[in-house]
Image 1: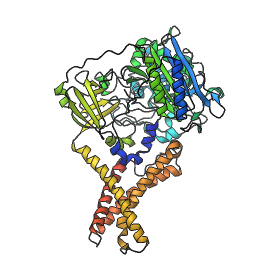
Image 2: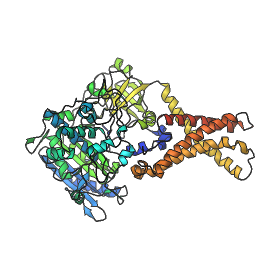
Image 3: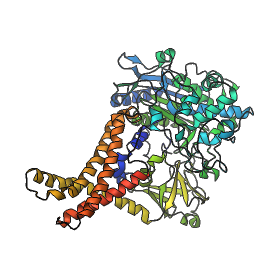
Image 4: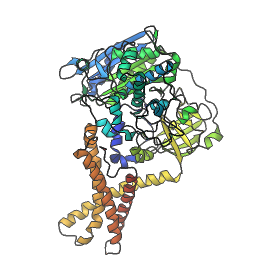
Length: 636
């Protein structure tokens, strides 16, 4: 499966903050993730190292930590490139990297250990275990939030707000203080245990339950029960002098500009610093199904439970691929398990093949996801080169009667944040059609993917080793499908065309408003335009367009330091708020003026254009206001 699951944060989050900038680019969007890079086979780790060095040099990425691990131990642990460019300090196998969301699995491991000891159950409700933790679930009486929902990201909560991402507490706060900082983001948007939506507050809430049960600080519990038994001797959640002495510096895309250490508000979500040596032991633990150094730390059944989702509609109907307990599947010719992670200036990928007994971790000190993807593709190719070819899977006949009930247009209904729903529901539109041997899903701009059946309701791409598309039998919320972690609902056939036409029309009217202004503004300045009293009719659509364009530009310029600029009350965030309000004000005023002067001697083409532009812009403003993007206070 192409990477569907997010890092602690990623470029995808930057795009979500830049939603306004993307409004009129939606017609160029696709519903599908990009395909993985073409693999290249390498016979030795020396060859692999040379290729990785080439990638780092070409992309101005300072350094990487890599480990390739077999069941009986590490095959290769390497530090490549520089940990500190200015000091010319090399990366070594002992260099610490920030592993971001890869940290989340230690929450799930801890919950499974406590469950094994009879102290906790995945089915326990959050309310019963942590009654002092604030959250909102309108369905709590019938569908309470359970520990399993926190770890499988099926609470329905938003991801944490920009102000939570931006908060950099130094000295670091307690877990409870971090959770209390912005509890409003913990509001269920649908029944818990039905749809997957990644949120960085779920695992910390589970970690708080662990603190209450054990009476220990979560990080101390992990140190005692996981880091020490696994020989992860340098791994740490904290920014200590010892950690700083081993930690790589983090860099922007230029490979020179450093990024300061970021004290994550809720540490269990993504704060671990670990070396390639530490992570090699951790991967070996999974390959040996919960055992390390001859000690069984968790039973194999607990590791298997981590690797399977259970609480979405599709999982409850039998789909085994997706997001389990802080561990998700990547389905290609083989089914990988693991988790990625990232902070500003650092990315990590951990993946393993349990049946084949091999896995890897790649860590880089840059936020360039393309670089991580290139190195990851090389390593995946290397570890699979000597494995037996996967068996050719049978393709049963299509259940035509079942499929017929699911054809049509779909929109995504499980966005990571409520504020992104207005854009994702249009950008993610896709159409399902029947094929003689399966199904086809075509995104908004024609990006198409074919699927072949595995069962009556489960489908896979021809190159995939397991099903990744489910036709949901439960129709209590309409006709649903689930694909790569996203839930889609069927919509009437006219709706996508209305939305597409609306987007195209809005873009054209903005462009022509500016085009007309390039004609009438000079005429006005040089005295050729006498109808001064009616210029406001022409001006409002132009001002609305310029407000929207300025908001887009502001977001683009803010993106390199997004959290600091938009997560606090700054000129950047206040400016964005003001520009969105200005867009709505100019749209409404333009419509009012056009109607007021409809019978005045204005050239009909000019009037109709101004009226149409203001009307469409008003509709856009109402739509954006409904989803909270007019007067958007990103710092709240």
